[in-house]
Image 1: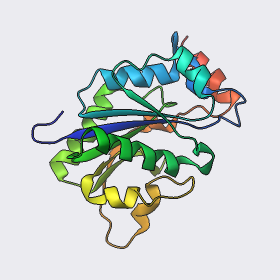
Image 2: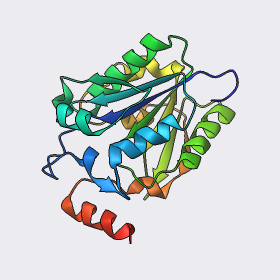
Image 3: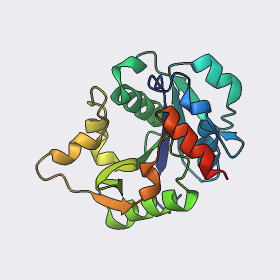
Image 4: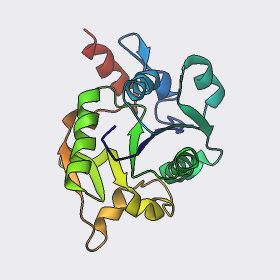
Amino acid sequence: MIANNKIGVVILAAGSSSRLGFPKQLVEYKGKALLQRMVDLVKSLTFDSRILVLGSGVDKIKSQVKPGNITVIENNNWEEGMASSIRLGLAKALESEEELDHLLILLSDQPLVTKRQIEELIDLQINKNSRATFSEYDGDIGVPAIFSSSIFPDLEKLQGDHGAKKMIYREGFKYETLKLEEANFDVDTMNDVELLKKMEE
C-alpha cells in the first residue's frame, strides 16, 4: 500500500454475538451484511496479505459472505477470546508474506468506518514509524489498529479477550492515535441493530 512497506490485514469475525443472539457479522446495513461491508473495504485497498478469521457460526457466515481474494481461516478456539484470533490471524498472514512490516487489525461490526479513515491510520503509522497506531474514540483507544513487525512477538503472546490494547500499559511503549469517532459504534445488542437501521433512513 505504501512504498517499501509490506502490510497485512486481519479481519476479526470469530465471536459468537452472545448478547445479540444471532451472528452480528450478518446484520445488514444499507443492503449488505456488516462482515461483507468490511470484506469489500479490504478488497478495495492493496495489502500484501489478507486474512479473515471466523469461528462461531462459521458455516452460516461462509454461506452468506463472499470473501473474494481474502484467505478465510477458522479459529476453533474462538471461545478463548479475541487474542486467539489475533494470534491465528498473524500466523496465517506471515505464512503468506513472511516479510510483513505492519499488520492492520479490523473488526466486522464497525460499519461507519470508511476506506479513507483506514488509509489515514496506515499513513500515520508509516509516517511516524510507530510501533502501533490505534483509533481513538470516546476518550479511549482501540481498533482499527495497526502494529509494526517489531511487536509481532508480543501479539503472538496475547491471551484472553483483551486484544492488543493492554500493551499500551507497558513502560516505555510508545504509540500513535487517530481520532476516529465512527469506530465507537459497533453492534452488540438489538438496540445497536435498531440504531443502525435508523441510520439508513
